Amino acid sequence: MKVEILTTPGCSNCSVVEKMLDEMGVSYDIIDVTEKPEYLQKYPIYTAPGVVINGKLEFTGVPKKQKLIEKIEGVRKIS
Image (cartoon, rainbow, N blue to C red; front, side):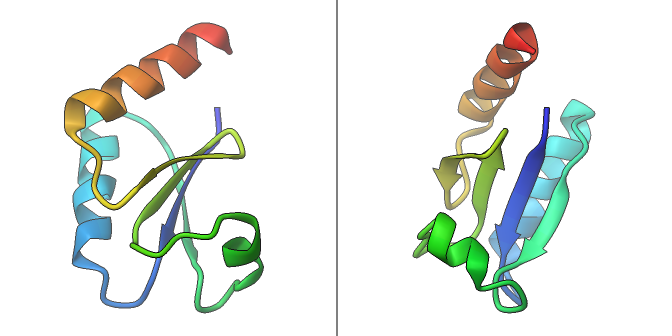
């Protein structure tokens, strides 16, 4: 499973999502979309963070923790 957090400089909400994933024991990559604008072409987010799981944009903004857990667990079962 590959998880990416699409972020912008100074994004306080991004650290909230990072903390949730850390607590769940999920590894992730942080992508600064200001440095890699090609990500915005592929995943047109208007609110940071964007949470991409296995190449699919699953959330924009801070998801509810339970929804994030359900999505991660669902992907783990498939993988």
